Length: 138
Image (cartoon, rainbow, N blue to C red; front, side):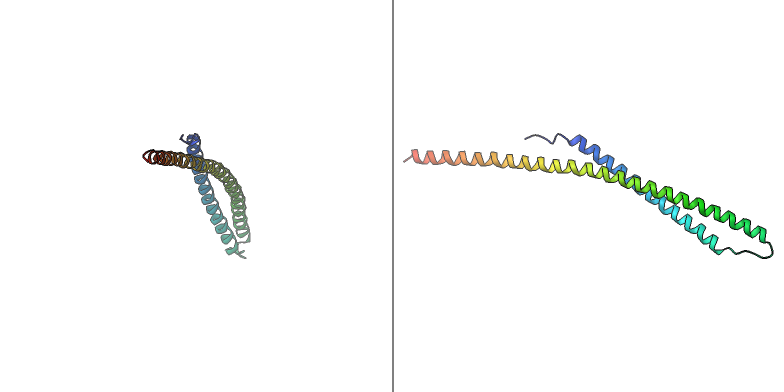
C-alpha cells in the first residue's frame, strides 16, 4: 500500500479554494455596501424638492446629489463585476479541489480493494494448509 501521491497538491488546492472563497465573501460584502450606498443616494435624491425661493441653490443641490448617485451606481457596477469574477475564480478553485478529491477517493478504493484481496489470499492459503494438514493426519 502506498500513500496518495497528490496529497501536497491537494493541500495547496484547498488553500487556493479557501483564499478564493474569502475573496468572494469580501467582494460580496463590498457589493452589498455599494448597493446600500447607491440606494441611500437615490433616496436622498428622491426626497429633495425644488425650493421656489432659492431655485438656483436647489438645482445645484440636486445636481450634486445626482452626481453622487451616478458615482455610486458606477461603483456598484464595478463591485458587481468584481464579485462575479471572484465567483468564477472560486468555482475554478473548487473544481480543481473536487478533481483531486475524486482521485483521492479512487486511490482509497483501490487501496482497500488491494488490502481485501491480500486478506482473502491469506485466508485461502490458511484454509488450504489446514485442509492439507487435516487430510494428512488421516
